[in-house]
Every structure is written in C-alpha cells, then in structure tokens.
Image 1: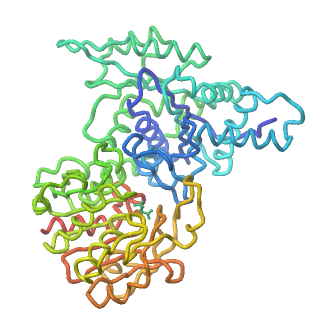
Image 2 (image 1 turned 45 degrees about the vertical axis):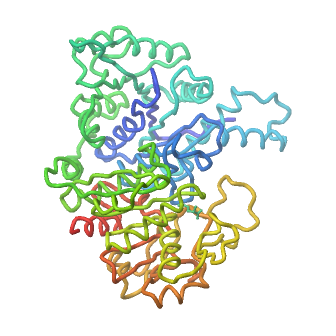
Image 3 (image 1 turned 180 degrees about the vertical axis):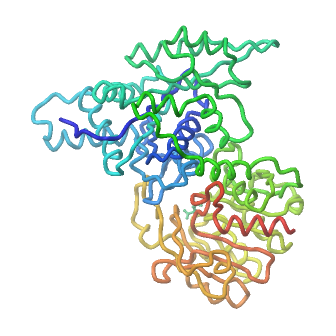
Length: 538
Ligand code: GLN
C-alpha cells in the first residue's frame, strides 16, 4: 500500500509516567497556539481501547461521552479540542483499536490482501496511518496534532506508536514532531523537582524508536532551570524544548505558558517555517476570553447539578464548562454543587441554590429523585434547566403533579406505565445493538414564535446535537398546553418535541438536545447564558 504525499505537518503527543497528566490540554494548547499563528489546524485523539467508540462506556469511569456534529460518541478530549479551537471536530478524529481492527478484518474477509499473511505491521499500522492521512488531506490542514491515549509502555498502544514512528521516518523530521508529556514530582519540603520518572519515560519511548522533540513536564511549581538542564541531559531533548507545564488556575492559560517558553518559534524552526508567527490581533481576542474566565471576586452564582453520575467531575465536563462560559459572559463566577439524585435527604436543600440543572442520564436508578427535583424547582420558582433526561423527567413531573395523571412515567423507567409521557422513538423499537444506535448528532430544530425559547435563541431555526432513545409522547401535548407548559421547539416536521417551557415561571426550560456540546469560551450556548443570567437574578 502506498501513501499519498500530504502537505500537512504533524505533531504527535504521547504520554509518559502515568495517566491523567493532561495530555489533552497540552494537545489542545499547542493546537491553539498554531491556530493563533494563522495555521489551519485540527486534532485527532487515538484511544487504544477495544471499544469501537466511547458510547457504551460508563461516564463515571471514563468521563463524559462527547457527541460530535456528525453523531460520533467520542472521548471527552474531543470536547477540549472543540472548546480550545472554537471549531467543530468530526468523529473521524477519534480513532480506536476496534475501528482499525474491524476495517482490517473486513478487508481480509473480502480477500483484499491478495493472499498475504495479515499482520500488525504493516497492515494494522497502514490502516492507522491511512486514517490520520485521510483527515489531514480531506481537511487540507497545515498542521494536524495527534494525541495518543494511554502511557508509553502500554501493550495496547504499541501499534499506534509504531505507526507514528513510521510516519516520522517516511515524512521526515521537517514534517513530524513528537511531544512527550511527563511528570516531575516534588517530594520533600524543599520542593526538589524529581527528574527520574521523566528520564525513564523518555527512555521507554526511545526503546520503541521514538526520540521526543519536546517534553511537556507537568509539575506543581514552574520547572526550575536546573531541572530542565538535568532532564535535557538525560533525554536528548534541547534544554529550551523542555517545557514547564505547571499548575494554573484555568486550563485556558496553558497556551500562554507554553508560548512564553518559546514553543511556537521552536516548532516553526523545526518545520522550516520561520517567520510565520504573526497573530497579535488573534492573541488579544483569545487573552480577552481567558481573562473573562478568571478573577471574579463577586458572589458566585450557585448552581445545583442534580443527576446520577455525580461522583466523577468529568462525567458532565461539557456542562460544567458551559456554565463557566455563561457566567464569564455576564461577568460572574459560578459555583457548582453536584447532588446525587439517589440520595437527597430533604429537597429543601435545593432552595439554597440560585438555579437547578438536571443533565442527561439513563435508566431507572436515581430517576425518582430527578422527578422530585424538577417538581421542587417548579413549585418554588427556582430557575430550572433540564437537559435530555432532565427535559424528559421535567415533563413527567408536571404530568404527575399538575395534570394529575396517575402512574405518569417514561417507559425507559417503567415499561408498562399507565401514562407513558416519554416513550421510545418509533424507529428504536426493533433495535437490539446498544452501540451507536441512539438518535445521534446535529438536527435542525424549529423554534416557535412568541416563545421564551425564541427570545433565547433569536432565530426560527437552530441546529443542536442529540443523544437519546426516548422522546415526548405527542398524545399528551394538548393537556400540557392547557395547564401552561408548552413545547416550543420541534424537529423532523413537528414529529419530535425538542424544547419545553413554562412561561409563567421565572425560568423553566427543558431541552431534548445537548446544548453543552456547542458552548465555547467567549461564546456560551444561548440557553446556558439565559439560565445563568436568570439564576444570577434570583
Ligand atoms: N435516557 C434518555 C433517552 O435515552 C435520555 C438520554 C440522555 O439524557 N442523554 O432518551
């Protein structure tokens, strides 16, 4: 198999020492710096696990499933890329082992390998390279930054690192750069920064044929020059290219930290593209946005986030970000408390909050707590935003207490409910596979005139991302309307209800879609901005 020559330059980001060092933030920050230097950039995330995509993974263990415009159920790093770059990323940018192997096995069954013995090298590595090149070529990128998940030394990431090594050999060092993310822990009271984990990690990388060009070293305090010098000596990386990635208040400050250490000039020099850094206007805009997200000394807007997957902050990472984007826009900070809907001792605690948000969720566990939360918000006139599950169960709550419909429920929670307010999407009835089979991705929504939603979105049509199997049962709509709850957003020619609102309430909105995936720093998604503004006035 021969590869088509591509003009794109590549930056490969690998991980060392341990997971959770923030490779995604380093990747996004480098991409941002190059974007600010007028390069057309994008990012890819490689996930070496065997799941085909993130869709079937538990958010409490792996973090949120990030949904792309084209309906990909992706790793949450894709969300970081979108937020840093303020650009949409397609599902082809999240490559997994399962996708690669299924393609190779399918080709083998079709006889496409013409009798060859099919092997990891070259067949699997070729498929990996193809996927990377396809993104670079089809999007005509100047620079593509590829983040390889996992830590060097993991068995499952070996074929990917081998493919990246081959790309460097084929395309040459003027076109390919490796950045390795490691850790320099400080153990004693004097705060001496230890270099051994980084030394070993760089060695492990060299053992498989990769010499890093940059080391991005995570540390609590800025990396001292003597530490940089020592690391450089043991890893063959120039001292100037050993970069301190110390703790900062906001992840959006990381591009500046890397810039201050000369990473952009160094990248351009290595790429033979000297003199292209000319982005002061872009820089000012970006810094303005970062600045707006920091240092609010006023009283924060207090939001209760009530849901099921509250034990891991990353389970709703995009919702958290969206709330921060919204509060920054109105010059405030936001304080989010996660409340487990399974164990709310007394719903009165909810009156301590300026707003209540119920994000997406699945299944029976914790659902009664969500229904009661929506009810509490409505009765006590506390601003409420329900997303997907939070939209569906707000409708159930209203049906129970205002429409007085006995046994009102979603059939996801109670299959034989007497009043199935929320029911399976008709096209879902015969689906058996759980993976990739929900209603996914962006769809157009029509917003009704003279509605709160229209005031929020200021447009008759909007496009939003979805991830659900159930929807509002249209048989009940007139009953809802009679009692003051209106469905003011619809999709698929009026077939599906997308937005609900109670206009007599201070702020009570539910959305079937996921607005959090469209929110970006400096550009909060409309309904988040409206919700946080309403909460700020409580
Ligand atoms: N469980 C609900 C459904 O499948 C809601 C999904 C969600 O909140 N993402 O429709």
